[in-house]
Image (cartoon, rainbow, N blue to C red; front, side):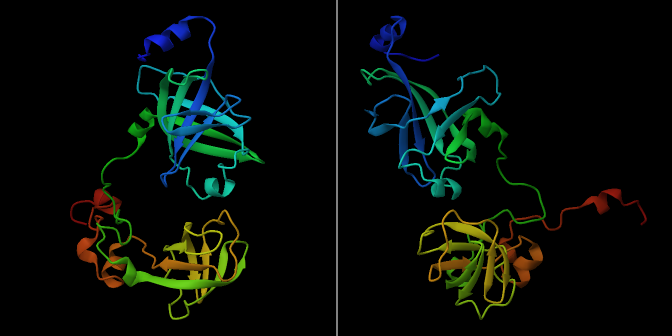
Length: 279
């Protein structure tokens, strides 16, 4: 049940309303954006809700069970704050969403209708469709550790314990092909495969701050898994970390960090389960 102020409740019950939908979006980098279907900007709670033309939303439905309540918002990349490169770079992945119903003549009359997270985003030309997932979707996410062979720590995080500076190299782009294959300066001393599964982060250029996992590494050449949202140019600088395949042998031999290994390398597998007594 929603708690409405007496004035807003009276407005809703009047039969003649001036209501609009507003969406507040908080990205993973902390940036906050607001949009409204109304024909002029609305401001409340310290956020400007931009009148971005072309926004429409599907019907908003709520259920009493634990099913995930979803809503689709369709629009065009018409706002200067909606950047296709940021979308492709993942800055909007799992962004927090608030959906408000607002009296546009008096924005003090409003009610929070739904909170959730941004789900799947599909694009077609200059348009997009964004899925908004209700809070119940978090109940479908795994929580805690998994009983598995591989390590579940991120390389050089607090649980891994290694110092990232000891396993990071700096380089610069010398030549690029297809926005995925990079010939780099500064990596000649490293053996082929050293940076495979590592993370490449640009420190200058159009992709400054963007990161992508390395798919393959050969002498002086890096291939990333997916093309970055903006063009890579010769001279762009980057850092790249050594790759870790999350296996116990690699942790022990390559990094000497087996005491901090966060997997279960000795867990019994299918051979143990299927073995017969006396075999």
